[in-house]
Length: 434
Image (tube, rainbow, N blue to C red; front, side, top):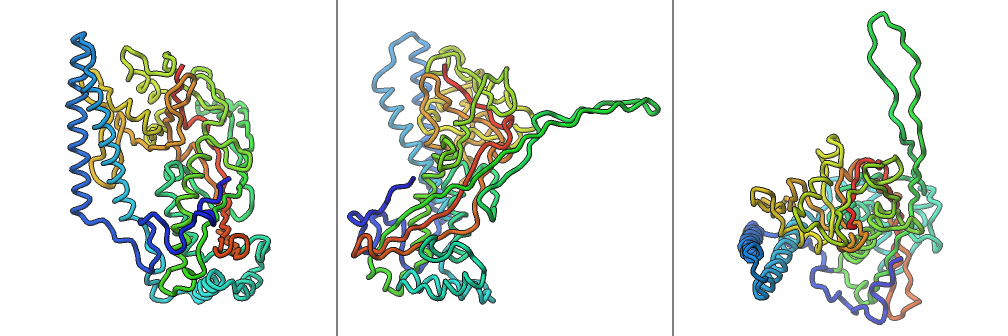
């Protein structure tokens, strides 16, 4: 579970050390077209320099000359600069899409929402919970009071989830459902229904019904505990909604990103790498198929890109239309150096600020929770994650105010319930290093 990310001992008394989280009641300044254009130009120049340096390295190897150490160092520096330029472009794009909190609402706001927001603001600033108790009693909510905290306004919850979709790579790719209970169940077919062609007057033999199995997706509790001083809370200019969303969004996204990839299903979602896997030639429902590289902890020496093509075509055509690669930064750095038979680089930078890098024409999602290339590692996933992975969000983001445990700081125990797991085992394929 998430540890106290801003402990009382280390929490800043007024503002966070990271200047990207503004506390004042104003939206983050969107990136200008000039800034986005400059970032795109920087990324393009870095990739051209990368290709030129890598071509020189390959020429040295093909000429049976030992690789120049300076060339290798230069390539590593350019590769790091390429990552930096791409991350800067991603940040500018994310800032442009980030919805403002605490700004001007709709022309005719819902009176109930206005009342809830005012009561929540009073609870966070002064600890006065009477207004929230009345609202939750009116709504027949079962989890109110000191046992479960109080629901945040719907606008805050909605914007936190929208931000998580931008920060969490798997959440951005997967199907997300909101549930009202603690468990989501769905039936899946493990065998196809039998069918066939018949003549107009021929007998219609009875066919076998498809075999069904039930998948369960329990919602687990995820928490964060940001801290603030009472002086900060007393400052009327501070937008409490924006402050709380900024505090928890990154912490929640980091925890989710790991759980959706490698989570063991105990007190957290079950990640797709934690599912049983078999060689794709022996694939059966309930397991994920993998394609082997044939080389221990590495790509094959001869024609290393062939295994990537094998991975792509291990996925059925119906899933490839919306498929994406998922890997971490180090594995992506290795793949950047690969070319096809015509000398074209397999990895290509995004064509515009709202696009992502591609590999073999398919989008690449960077998930740092994916393992590095090592013996027996499953370091690359490829598939239609919208059909293959399901995330369930229990409706409601709760906050419990604690002014006693870490005086003079006020802690805000913030929880959300989320679950996840593979829902279509044929929609995701893995690359396994020998």
